[in-house]
Length: 280
Image (tube, rainbow, N blue to C red; front, top):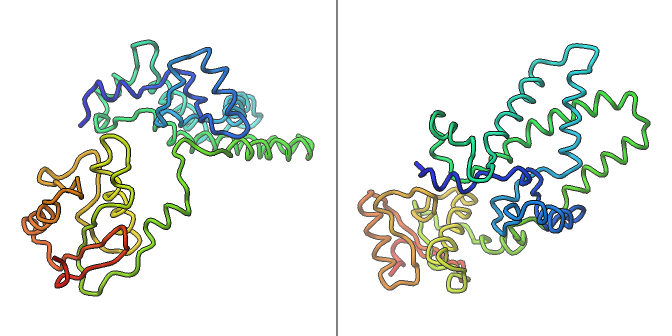
C-alpha cells in the first residue's frame, strides 16, 4: 500500500480540473498563461496532473446539471446518480492549500491506500462527464438550430486535439516492439538492454526501457516474460540494470527459483531471438 505522503502529493488544486496540458492545440495557451497566473501550483511539468477536462466539455457538463433539474420529465435515475457521484468524488480529489478531503477516502475506503496518483481519477470521471453531456446535447438538439449544434460538436472534437503530455511517437514505439515470432520451443523469455537504455533519463534508466518493451512484446506475442515493471514487484525480482555483467545470471537464478523452463533471450537491439540451447 501507499504511504499517505505519496497520495497527498498527487491530490489536485481545484484549477487542475482544467489542466489538459499545454500541448492542446486549441486551448494550450489558456493553461500556460492564464491558469499559471491564478494558480502557480497548478502549472507543473509533471504530466500526472494533465488529466483535466477541456473547457468546453467541462462547461457543458456543468450546464447539464441545470438541464437535469429543469427537465419537464423526471430525469433518468442513473444520470442523476452519475452526476452526484462525479461531483462528490471530484471534490474528494482536491487539495486546498495543505488540506485534502482525500484523507477521508484514504483512511476509510477499502483499497484506497493502493492509489498513489490521485489525479488519475479524473480519467475515470471522463465517463460520467461524457455520458451526462451527451444525453443533454441529444435532448437539446430538438430545439437548437442545426448549424450551431454542428459547430458545437466540431468545437468539442477540436479541443481534444493536441500533442499530449507523454510525447510518444506511435511509429517509433511500434518499431521498438516489431520483433519476429519467437521460436516454437520458447515457453518464457527475457530481454537484453533496450537500444536507448544508456541514454534514458535519471533513475528510470536501469528499470524502465527494457522492462516496458518486454511487457509490450509479451502482450503482442502471447508469450510470458520474466521482465516487466510495476509499483510493487515480487520480493526476489531483481532484473534491472541489463548492462551489468551479472544480469543474465540474475535472470537464470530467478527462473530457476520459480521453476520456469524453456527460457529464451530476445535481443532488443537486433530483435533476434536465441532459443534455449543457443543462449550463452
